[in-house]
Length: 476
Image (cartoon, rainbow, N blue to C red; front, side, top):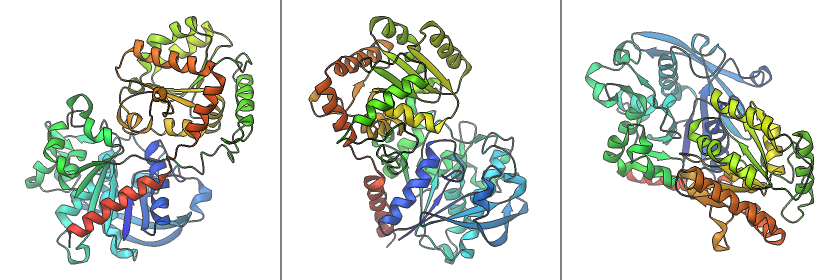
């Protein structure tokens, strides 16, 4: 079985978030299970020069983009045994930043068409083309319209994964023919809510549609979660499946993580105590092992539940002897709030802004409690990473948080959960965790139980393999 993973970003080449982690990890896990998996992504300007030097030029082709044709260079690189194809076009990709450009619709239409055009040139005919998020949503659309009846492409099936339904690729209908190169007669495939919707087109055309957790697959059938796409998803519910993401257990490994102050394991937690002490020093918090340290590593946006944090954190700091540390960036209103909070609670609160990977690792290892009260969370990787480092999650029961964290109240779980999206419910869950921290023997048992959880890509990869095989079987 052969799978081509189509993505707009992938580690280690270019990353803005969770999609890149998935694209860097899932193909590796598939390969370990004897699935021929390869990845294709754009050759961005932001990809470091040292990585470019290891790329091999394969060939160049001409790709149709509506009424014109564009140059497409095809480069190849190998990472961890997985082959990556990188699509080159300086007009579209020789610019800083992956997204947010005025012509993103055209850029990713070109990329999606290039993915399909390159296949006969790379000596790799996939059984499955697996596209991800709106940037590659046109891959199954183009395949259905222009390639499915071509003899060379016969037998290929398409999967489309929704990583976050909030981002759909919405554009004016005037782009259909002149930019996307799709006949006006096919407008119903993409039209939704008075505009062209890339994500809707993928849901219509892909053979199967997946999301990144089982609960999220159910949630997006509800208007509160679907950002307007619930009706089409309900119509295509038969092709929808949720598969929980995994995490990279090599990168996130407290026994070998070079970013930590000290390494440790579930069998010897001495290093975890040292990480807490050193983290308190670095963040200029009071150095006290008996005080519970609550950490967050997050984008500072409303979706991440920061309105709940803002509505309850003052009360928690006044009512309990806790410390709080946050790392992230985002909306000005939240960054301003956390700056003010640090000033009002010196040596008890530290607010760090930006994307600082080494500090995020130190927070996972040094904090006692990890707070993740998201309004919605398609999958979430941070809560799984926190478990790996013995940092006990407090999460709201939504999406992947619900599927990955079991409340410890039953004596078997490894976190603290709450259901209602209210500041009071979140605060109560945090207080439960703080109370649990006070029982040192019980807390050690909880930490070891958390570190024993297996959220590696193994289970997820097996679920995808089952899905792929069922699609191949149905095609005869």
